[in-house]
Image (cartoon, rainbow over all chains, first blue to last red; front, side, top):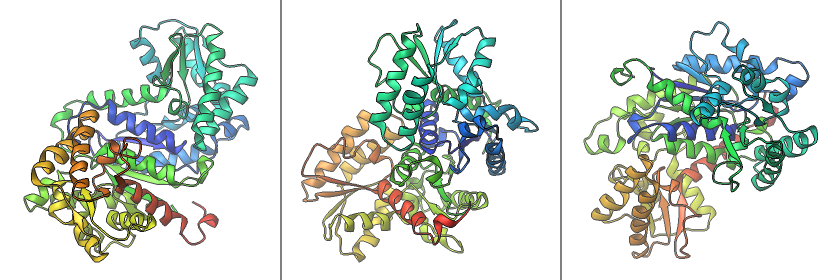
Length: 242
Length: 242
């Protein structure tokens, strides 16, 4: 299957659906046949990523490897993983793999650059797993961005509780908690805030943002755009027959 | 993979994403791990279904068979096809298959019954392929429903043009055309209108419906609910390990 994108999803499922929709909307296509062939593996039974990181376990890696294997067997030629925390295992996942896996932090950095945001501080709303594992901090520091994260109390009651509310479908409650967390980052002089957990943009986005002081950077949207760029950049794409 | 649902999608891709989201939202789950494992095959290069039906060609069948084969190999135990027109080939598709394929018209009929709508006339907004192939009319007439379809001019300029506008992402234009088509069915005494093309509920739904005279029945939603029922009805589901 030429030019097919594989989505390793299920972490969580609603975030996978959001990412899928963002890829479709970011694709320049006027009819069905011009859209990207996509395979999705959405198996939400993969153990909680944050819990695994905090307890030093690599269990999710086995699940993710099985998912990528299934996607490759179906014909995927590139993998996107719409889960920030899962990127903790990125290096181990790509080891030995002969197709590219897009990195969500690189995709987000590309969005920052395209918006002419070239220096920090950048606020980060993400799971405790993503923050503890320094998924963003490490890659961002190389690029010269300072990464500001919420204080422990806000992280627990604003971010973690907000993400859990999204997963449970309690969206109004989720939005209230996450907006409060974002405001604490603005108070620390962050005007660009990375929504670094795929559940967050479901409730915080340009439609819900009424503050001229905050610019949200949706990592899911960035990964979707990077996926479309990968597809459009394939040599001879238009001539290839699926 | 026990209890996994396979989605044969891509017809079109946005409708597939809409269906995926509806399945997730219809699932009683408070955390990721309680959601249904799902595989999606979204290959939008399958030839246009309506054109194929009108010109007497079976080309889409080959594509769809390949999709179901891929989904089964990934571990799917049941197939849902979020494309009404594709159900023209339903009997040929299920022939020889050893896992169930949910039928979108049966799912819609179940929704009508659950809303205590037990007699016609029922309006139908669908592609010209679905209407010409009598996908709904045949199964509905057995159940005692009369099916009313738009006149030829409304079908072309309201329904077909509206569906094409959804596929091209021109949603406001799509909504205007499809609402006008729905109104011609209300004038023919239809108060329940089946949205029998997966692109239509993207722009016509309970949020956009301000008329107390119209009740929209979203076939995509009905199929999503039937998919969740299939999963929850599996024997010993909770005990099964993926």
